[in-house]
Image 1 (tube, rainbow, N blue to C red):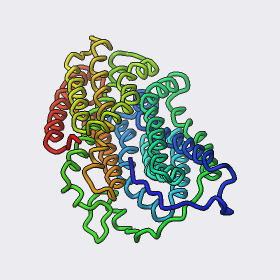
Image 2 (cartoon, one colour):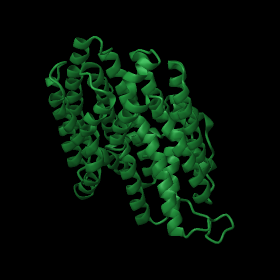
Image 3 (tube, rainbow, N blue to C red):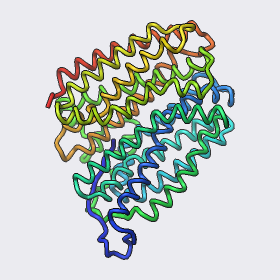
Image 4 (cartoon, one colour):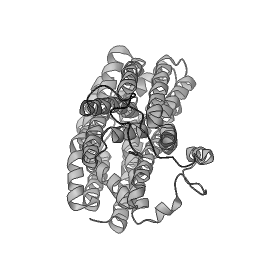
Length: 434
């Protein structure tokens, strides 16, 4: 997650305050922010199941569809910290509105794109909108729920609702591609965005904030191409990485997304272009990879609160690594039953791993840096997604060379298991148990 601040709100008697009751207004704000973030996370996974249809629809190749997936995540990862800082400066309500409008317009651009280049550019535009919306939505919720206990419950609801987008992505994407075609996947967003914009205008009120620190445009620019920068007030102080566990937690977060999303990129093509399943069936087959994330995340949070992040992270890493090793049984003819243990192992592993890896990053830094720490952790995860798609796609190549493609799936499973072993060693050496 990204940085959130609650620096004060407009008094209820103010002329600009909404007329609905405070509790009801806060609930409506939460609903709107959940809907907006559902779209942002949905577009991380929904496109994967449409990859074969996009490949044939605009006559592109493996490198082209890699960029279709990565343009979104690369831009999102690059601009997350800048989006949060911009919201601190000009107000998160404005940034959320801008993010929604950009995201909706770019989604329409994706649906209308005639070429690979146009689709990649529109996907990058979606990433810009998402980078503004993600930190802004958290800040809007924090403003609507000023009490710490209220904030914790509200953000828990936000996180749980948002995580439903991950299993919904392959299923919804498969259903739409199968019935309406791949372009319809992107037409969902503008309609929902219009409703969210109306909700923000009506219910999200601008908050009175303390004077923000000077906006360092150079820092924002450098954060886009490289997060650290030497400055008097850097966007990402390198001193954070001197804190025990901070670097380990963010490395672990990057590996988690690199291995799971890289695998997803290959499996959507394996299920459709090697095993011959349609898009909807492939989406259903991928549910064991994503459902555990939504189901186990609350449990992982409770276990982390009770036992600390280290034991929960170690259990998750072990399961994910074991699941990756199960890919050794996959061939071009064995079919889905042989793939299911790998999907379940990786799904259960990242389901246990996601909550404690964020907690570990936050616990490793002083309390006043917790928002930045969570933002860096989320950036590491999005960077891992982009790297995973790029690396796995480059190694596996096209599914038309079936032998090489399936061999690459098995080899990447072994490589991922080794990475998870390295992560376990980092956790054991650097992450505190309480």
